[in-house]
Image (cartoon, rainbow, N blue to C red; front, top):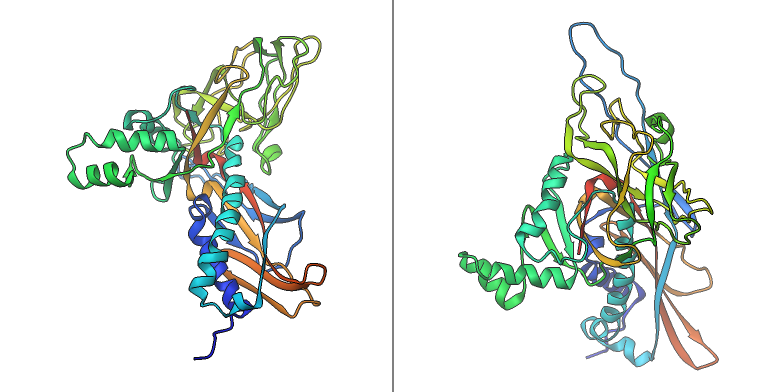
Length: 410
């Protein structure tokens, strides 16, 4: 029987399938494929939905249409490459895949997922006790409660846990009276669904090191609210503060979360009128979006998210912070904590773009499917007398709706 020669399209199709099978976070988020060719640094714009509020009475109340948008930077260009012999190309695709393609795509998928997990720093909702592994139902359920209170849709929720939390919860289920759940938890460490989440173990869960903050931080000046019209692209603002220890490098880190005394969270779904949102019984959490130091007098002006908006359909808080309102940072200074993630599908987006096929290569292929795109090229290395193959992916990640996520610290 004649040998089956592997073609570039066959290898590319197999590589794409193996990549999709190996992704964890990338398989659960909003995954958009762009047909346009792109290069590193290009951006893709995404329109965000308009919010309205309910007006009272028979007289029509006109509402301004304020349509926000966000953009995803296609800033990740990754590839895997290996040498092979002509004889290798006569293998069956199953053999070639097991030997070369599968391990290569596991590496690429791991790299893609790791970038996605780093988006935790965009999420401001934050539950759990820093330093305590969320290893029981009672320690996981606050994330579900917070997302429900924040009007996150019940469908398409999933929970990414680091190994310590994942195996702890699996052990917690062994004591249940549900035979099937106990067997899979004990023998396979499979959790299944819990608290409304599809649960996944994720070795790439990021650790966040809290800034080296010190002092007695306070809001410096009243009337520091803003409006959606000024923040509809980024939903961030600068907060003027003081009371920190003087001249601290790394005072606050991107991803640090803090609360402000007297500033409570509100249900994001608009109620009746422009101030009809339900006030929650807990303080609104704000995330720092960029590293910042304190100056020589203990002042600092971190950029925070969400913006402080006290009225209208995009209201985020119950009230503006008062002058000298106390600021409380979550976690111990200069200490690292795992950032397990409770997410809705639309919290994060992964956008892949096709790469152009090089004119100078005869053995090449590009495959796209289900929101993913890869390119394969083979060439001959005259210096080492080897054939070489490379598989490339061009993509970008963005937290497009960080309000749909919640960090479950460990």
